[in-house]
Image (tube, rainbow, N blue to C red; front, side, top):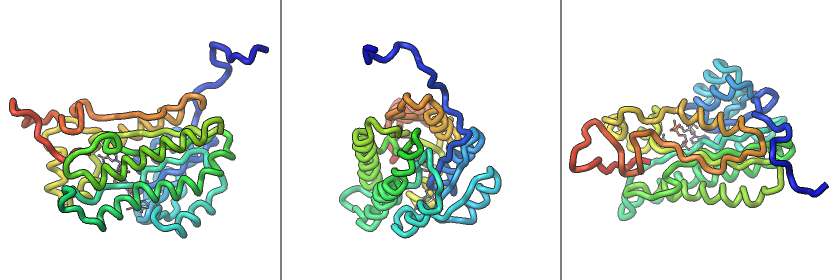
Length: 273
Ligand SMILES: NC(=O)c1ccc[n+]([C@@H]2O[C@H](COP(=O)([O-])OP(=O)(O)OC[C@H]3O[C@@H](n4cnc5c(N)ncnc54)[C@H](OP(=O)(O)O)[C@@H]3O)[C@@H](O)[C@H]2O)c1
């Protein structure tokens, strides 16, 4: 035996969801709800977590999942959530959001703290709690829904881009730390996704939220991101999708969005994520 691996696959094939338990955070709306729905359809045993239990139980009943209360910013909540799980093969860290669009000169430090708490500290807290179970599964997946805001910055986006850059950094460090262990570390970085609540939470009014997507013929929707997540999770387990950047075709870059009111003056600059 030379110790040199063969040039053909040795029996590893696409991983079905059947028999695997997937935890999805922030599943009471948007990308999290779509991901939970898709993973249940792929045969995963799905556990959904979020703060709004009414929405969560409605979804869980509809897709045959288990709903557990989870506030990723609360250590006791994360501890209770982790203690309620028998096994975890997949963790989809999706809970997060943006809460302002202020320039640095008008930074609202409470909003910065809230943004950092949920996107960065909440993600680290839950990942740390579930990592032993992911390793013990023998074929674990720690998947992070970051954002293109974790790769570039834009005006008015400092609190959110700083937090998502933080997520990107923790993903990179974790992958290095886990090399040789049976856990994949996967980052999915979406661009503009039209979800019900994201821009509403950030901008505070339906009118301002609608303006983010106005004139964009086909922004991504939550199901598009769920599709990418499901694809990455069902590759053979030696295939690690390190980072997937996924945008609508209409968004070539953060500031370059084709809108129906696009003119020779160029696309408008907006706080796109
Ligand atoms: N929409 C976009 O354009 C876009 C683009 C790139 C990346 N992303 C990222 O994708 C993820 C999902 O976004 P989305 O568009 O689906 O937004 P969304 O509909 O606002 O979903 C956010 C989810 O996070 C949950 N959440 C918030 N705080 C939480 C906490 N403390 N503990 C547990 N769960 C919490 C919310 O549930 P509860 O309020 O019930 O707790 C909700 O289910 C976020 O991380 C976001 O930053 C979104």
